[in-house]
Length: 92
Image 1 (cartoon, one colour):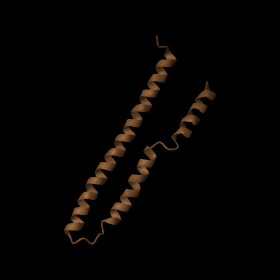
Image 2 (cartoon, one colour):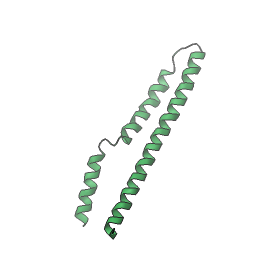
Image 3 (cartoon, helix red, strand yellow):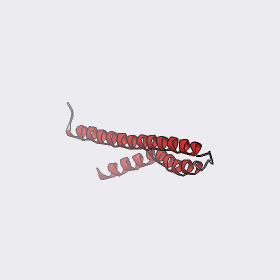
Image 4 (cartoon, one colour):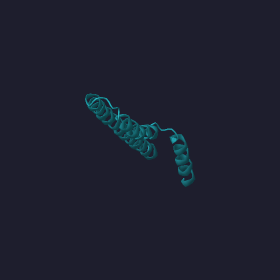
């Protein structure tokens, strides 16, 4: 039998998992769009004589994709989780 407190904990875990899936989906969409646009730009650059101007958008946008990936990778999230638990314990 699930008590009221356990049910709330299950709901909280579900909501966190749902939020995590949204974060991952957002990153994968960003990565897919980045790859498609960069492939198109590489094709255009090559067709135009290959002046290799395409490196600038690859590097520029690539930095933002890397930052997005770093944020989604949950590096440093363990500290946040510990702090949340600590605050919740104090409020009990």
